[in-house]
Length: 335
Image (cartoon, rainbow, N blue to C red; front, side, top):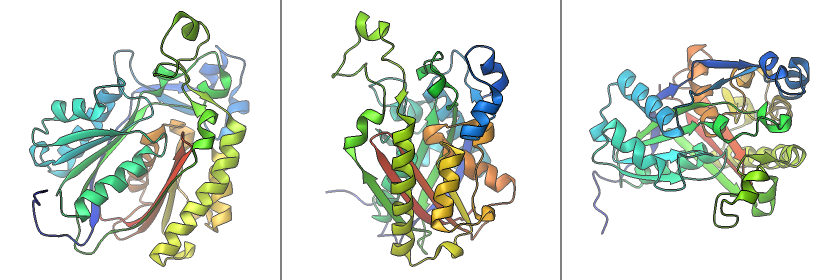
């Protein structure tokens, strides 16, 4: 039997937010000095102008720990009160143990369980949905969800189709009970037929590491950009519309739409299909690039800092990525 920490709760909310942003900035102009590209080529096709890179001695867990520490220090919460740590990342420290286990130990979450969620760039939304389920069911009071990426360690810096797109960073949120049910609706989906379109071919049990896989550069991220674009502009719209319909909310009633920061062309097309105005859509990929599971919490941090996201606002977030997976969530912002 599962012991409940408290009575059955009516819902859940995002109760705290923290981020970790590496200091190193890599501009398009710098990239153009090492590969066949230009600032104009990258920015016109993706909307990205620069990205952050972690230090050579930093791993994904280091960024996650920094984001969680930022959350705890700025919001008056205590690590020993955390019941569960969920880590989401495209590139965890290792296949095992779970990055969440490392994070929990380093921040002092001595009373917490810990596990990783692997859902590609949709991981943060999947992690948020999992945390919401635990809290709404009354099983746990306080769940930490981190979205952290050291993607620069997994890129082929000779492949201009991928290395110009991604950056490093981390965000963390704390999910706690809410009597008024601040998180309204989720939609999660998956189409495994698209698995070859975004993956890291080698390093698992399908293609264990060998001289051949290393020589063939199969331990780096690979992506079919055209297929990912086609997938995202169809499935993301469907997911967002389903979430809005389930919550009984119209697009015009959404105060801020925060999509995964993959490509400005995808963001603009999805926003237009859903009927969002420019004022309703937030993006910061021009400064961070695609930070995978970290992109949504980094956006939330920036949106708050810019006054674009305020307490009581209706917020729609959506992620999409390897799997191919997608997930959207409608919530009322409580910070």
